[in-house]
Image (tube, rainbow, N blue to C red; front, side, top):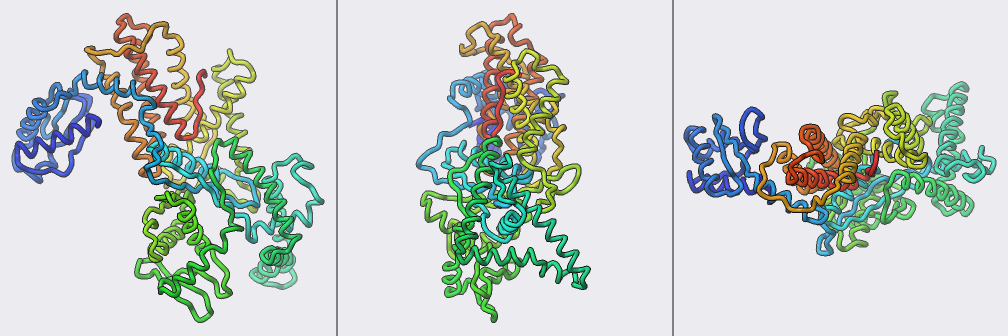
Length: 592
């Protein structure tokens, strides 16, 4: 229990003892700089429950707390604000507990806890991963790591969209124009090779549309009847009927893409415990729909299509099976969710990391599953995130204007190299050490820039801005961590001794308060599915540490007690940065 929790309990007891009222909550604020104190209780909300002068209520409550809480050394009242001064002894005891708790803030995974599945990435196999996929992967991976840090078992998964007309477009273009080239013969990653032919298809498709319009067809007719599109649709029908030649080509090109994805995932530092493939799951759910039809959850229209009416819930009617009996995405998602809970009996909840353009889809999916009687449906969550834009505008895959993930990683590394060379920070490093560090800084900048933003918000991504060594950036935090490691290497004394009965500086107390909060911030980040809370906490901690570093002597302190404590605090701040960044999927350098 931290100091705020102890105080809240004591305040509630005090209000009941003094005024015979039960208050539901206590509002705390940081004490303003011009007043003495560490925490301030806002008394005005208590006036709903007890009549009287706010100053007198605060004074009586302050006396009660001072008498009953050993953690409280003094108080003062300014109008309706009760400013509390926490004893130095409390801070020292709290810090000692943090210092002696192995891996403070991180809870071990317990077999008694229900597990969570986090789905992310889920790419199409007709193109390489791009900047939008990067945000998806970084969010999903970090959320999975943060949830695991609260003691839950986590399954990381993706569903790969390996079937459909988009796949056939790449396949057909390669058949027509590829001349048998392969990743090996071209030196290209397989996902890039497939993506090139997706772009090629679109180029040829547009040419055919233009030609048909010139011959008198309307634009809609031309788009629908362009020969290359008709052939791609025919290829999809052959695939669905199991045509041996088409299936063989599909397997070959998909494997190229999987191999390419694996390289990108490795560079990005994300992984999965299992993969699902749409080619295996797209028929799932048809039997569920049939049962729901019998039970009155769904209804059939005259043309034979099956729907659900959600107008009473403020939504609309949604198709779940086409008139020809074929599945739609919703059918597949219903079946896949049910299968996952069958395959993993310990599964308690499922998080879908999918862009906010699918908000409506997931509202409908969760509602349908609830109506079908699956109680676990209340534990399905859509981690909805905003798109990533560039200063140049939106990205379009079919036109080949996306920001390729691999190229962005290289660009970030090169930008880190350029800025580091300008600053002259790495002159003593070997060539190999420099290259490794450039990558650590570049990827750290990319990941932090994306993860520090609330998932719901859209991002305008600026690579150079993200690698600033000052401000709320990954490199700034990495540099502070490296500075702390330098201090620890220079410490030529034993700083493991417990320090007691020492007067603390306000900067020391501020850091201890932030360190104490680490456990709670992990819990809140997991609860809200928001790595941004953890990222910005880390920045606040680093900002506070740099103020501490600039204001107080550490190794140069003549007082041994103070020198030991400040080195211990530095060490614990470094450990906390490293743990926080690990949960964000970011590495920290020992030297920088």
